[in-house]
Image (tube, rainbow, N blue to C red; front, side, top):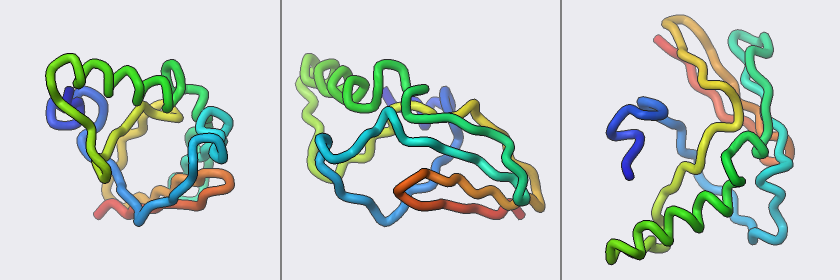
Length: 110
């Protein structure tokens, strides 16, 4: 179940300080995403790219884990899929992921 540890999806991800929203107040599938590399748009996507949607993917995970006697807990981190085609960074590049209505996250590769 640990796709990151198995390097099946991504080697790392950026975790921000959090953004609390009730599922009914948050359009996870409708959110628009842009990935800018050195100021140029390299990728665009949306939450709809997540297979089945983020909430359905989380429910599936909870059910699979529950069948094995594992319970998701408050504060557990779940990645439900990518909103854009994956991109591989290189030294010297600055990448900004812009999530419409939520904000930006950025990283500089050295």
